[in-house]
Amino acid sequence: MSSATAESWPEEAPAHVRARMNFRAWRRTRPFWGGLLAMFAGVPILYFPYAHLSLGGLTVSMATTAGAGSLIIGLLMIALGLTAWFQPLVRVFCGVATTILSLISIPVSNLGGFGLGVTPGLIAGGLLVAWTPLKPPAEDAAGEVPAAERTAHEEPVAHEVPAASEAQPPAHAAAPAAVDPEEPR
Image (cartoon, rainbow, N blue to C red; front, side, top):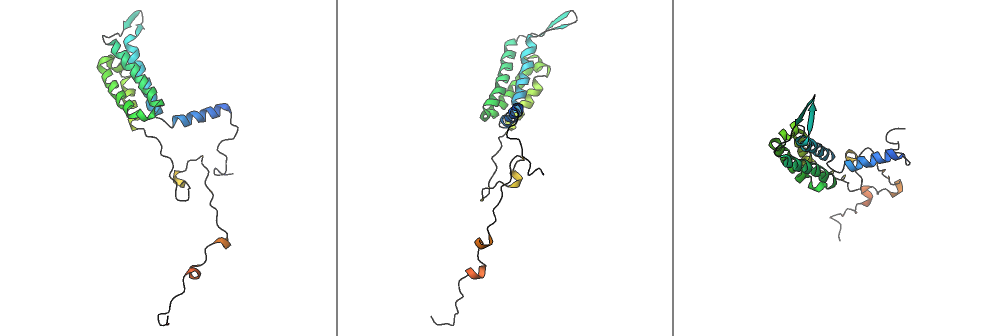
């Protein structure tokens, strides 16, 4: 048995395998990692202005005068990440907005969540802008997908070879008779 003849997945796969394969198919049709990083970047920007950290017996408050701005920036970045997941057509807008909000969070929200929100926010913006959906595989004239564009789970299409009786006649049999120029018409 070779990899070409092996069945890709059994017909009756367990539920967790089917769920994992469905999630993988869903994830590959949208800018998943850019959206996840955008949501991850919004959390520290949202959290640190309202946090009360305890260091030993001392309580440190990171509250700034722009706490409402941090709240808005953090929530918008989380909303942009979710929007990129569920509406992939607006990914460029989400990427540009995520990048701008990440940069605005530097002066507004404690250096952008002490760098924990700015860095993934800028990476997420780049990932969202750069992501493009996969093109469907091109088919040739015979309706077959070229081997270079075929994925591992697709099986190759078998070509039918015509029988010898159905084959085309030789070229000299199908050619018209030559006309002799000296023969009278």
